[in-house]
Length: 231
Length: 217
Image 1: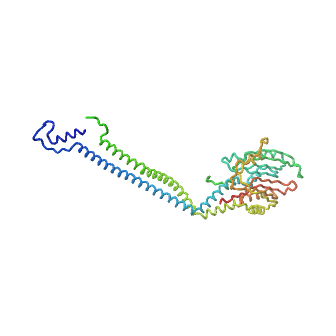
Image 2 (image 1 turned 90 degrees about the vertical axis):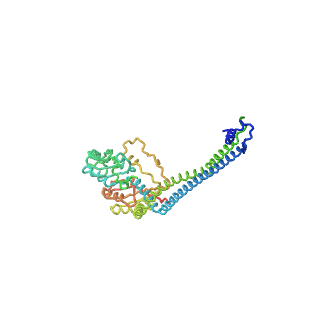
């Protein structure tokens, strides 16, 4: 809407269009505001509207900022509360540090013991079992035992004890017999005769001396120091 | 009606008003609200991670509290372990065990020798394999030191023991006693040999390890 239209409308409001009757005695006296005044007032009103709008906006922005600060403050308080809980927990744990030390020492030692002693086994039982398979009239005169390594995942496949056995006997065929009978045992992975000699010692001359190499797998380990939990 | 040379005043007012509203909003939100929000978000993030850490601490604490209930039991366990694997060499215990075993089984003790402590290395099966190796052509020297021991870790002291026994069963009883000691003895090798000049005499020599776990603190 242009300025002129508005002015025209204002004139019509007082009924007589001045451009039709040029000179009249009845020309009514109309106190019309000059268009410049109308214009200026409208501008001032507009400015005021904007001033209010700006004030309102400032208020709104302030509100938003306040809300953000409130939100931030709450988050900070929550965080501090959680942190304090953490400090509290740490303090409580610190009070129990003795328990912790004892526990971790105990655990370390148990783990180490398991590693170091996993090849624990009863040599007496092994020797007794070999003696049980000895043919008659033969006896062990020498035995060398070397223990195997730490217990592995596959105890059946890994060597648990190496044996070098020396036996005196009256009959040479005993070496064959003993080697074969030892081979039948489940924990024997190798049994080989390696030597058959006649003894030169001051014993009766019907004595033979023979040697066997025997390997046992890790199933002979006692597992006494191996924890069943497996940690 | 001429086209206006310059922008009408109202348009200018509208533009200025609108611009100041936008500016106020921008300044307010960007410079004041946004950092607050960013801070809040980072607070929340750190709170979340703290919560996670706390839940772990809580589990740890619960475990410790449960352990504290049976602390005497755990301490007894530790004391027992320390008898088996002491924090210092305490070789007197080893001598005690070996002498006691010899006395109990009637073995005639000839000698006990202790070596110096060395970092413990996990035992391998190489020696045992070499003893029964049928393939003598292959090199038997095991690659040593492939498991590098950590500093401050457990130590082992090698001990050699020699005794004389009258028969094989005495020898096995002596071995039995040595494998059931309080102070742990890890046996590496055993040699039992009948003396050629005296059939009633078996010489038993053992090579074994005793273990030491130094205190961490």
